Structure formats: C-alpha cells, structure tokens
Length: 281
Image 1 (cartoon, rainbow, N blue to C red):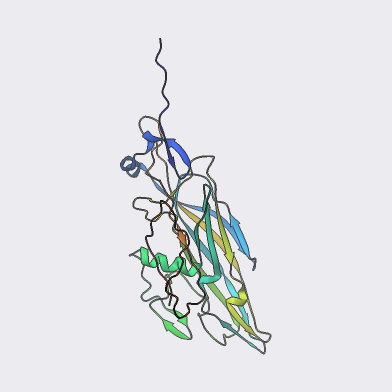
Image 2: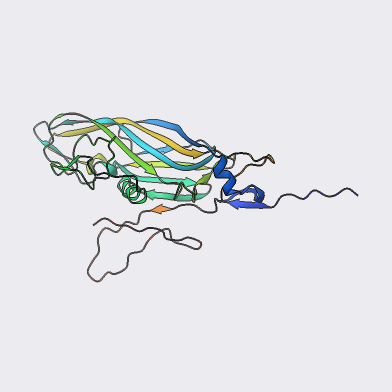
C-alpha cells in the first residue's frame, strides 16, 4: 500500500492561511528586499474624501502620504487667517483597513506626525523653521526639512499671493520595521486593504473674513513601503511571524470637566496590548 500524503499544517496570520513550515523569520530577513513603490496619485480639488486601494503584493510595512500643491490667498476687503489645525490636520482622518480588520489606523494627520517623531529616533525637527502665530519656530513643529507649510499655523492677516505647499505623513502599518510586527501579508489573492483619506473642511483650516478666500489645490500621492516574500530552497515562501495587527487609534474627548478622572480609550480588547498613549495639552 502506498503511503498517504499528509498536508502541511497551516498557520493563520491575520486571517490568512500559510503553511506552518513557511514561518522562518531568520531566513526571511536574510533574503527579503525592501521596496518603495508609487501606488496612486489623485488630484485634490477640495473633495471631502478619497478611497485608495493599494496593490496586493509582498508584505506592507508602511505608507507615505504626500501633498504637493498650493494655496491661493485673496484677502479682498476682508482677511484670511489660519487655525491651529493647519497644516497637518488637512488630513482630518486617515483610516486603514486590511484583511477584514477595520480601522487598524484611525487618527488625524497631526497625531500621525506626533507618533512618528516619538517612535523614530532618527527624526528631528530641530532647525526646521516654520511659522506659528507669526513667530518662526525651530523645534516642536513635527516638520521635515523637505516640507513647506506655505503659510504659517495660527497666522493672521495673510498677504495675498500663491504659496507652494509640500506636506508628508507616514502611516505605520508595522509597529517596527526591524521585526515587521504588525505588517500586513499581501502575497495572496484573498488579501483586502483600503486606505481612506478624509480631508478637513477648509473652513476649519482657514478663517475667511468678509470676502477673503483661501483656495487649495494639488496632488495627493501614496507610496508603499513593502518587503518581498522570498522562496526557500524547498520552493516554499518564507515569511516572518505576522500574528497580529498594529493598531493606532485616536480617542476624541472634547473637554474634561472637574471631577472626571477617567477617559475611555478605543481599540482595546482580548489579545491586544497597549504600547503607547499620548495626548496634546
């Protein structure tokens, strides 16, 4: 009697089944290659939302979102001012969903910038000058040297003109690229992921008095940071241990009253661990 073939045991990663023998982190990191891929570019013409589908390939570690454009300020007989939400809360909410898990990332653009600076020790905004309330600020802006706000934050009576804008946000799909904890496995036809960008109403970014106007236009582009899925000598794919997702969720509390000592955090549940908590003052 001929022997009966036995199927390799399966290992489920983020709802995706792979052979258990394929989970070999040390071999994976010795053979994988990092890819930076342009995903999609969309014109921004003051729409409220864009839904961007990313290509299903490799292992997704992060997404870079860039806005390149301009704002045309026309004071007329009134004036144009910026609010404190300008510029990074131009992205009111960034929402990322993957493989059936909704809102893995769900927070505003400014919170993404704050998390990025806290997590990545190589980032430093010292010496990067930006205007806030009419004063040049060189620390605490979260700005990169490659960015330009166009007009300052919390700035009043902005002169008429056309101001170029360059902004950037990093979406941390993986909590850490050193071990790819939380990265998303996409090398399968069953993978499903969506990036939703909700744009802030310009009335919440610019205070337009009288007949003063501020008109933003430009291009929003997305670039993915991915790692290839190599093959072993046995012909099987090799993957790291991708057991869970990395969640980054914003809890919104408008005001804290006297006597209130507890704030409810969203996104907590069985099998999850709180790694970081921060709040603006």
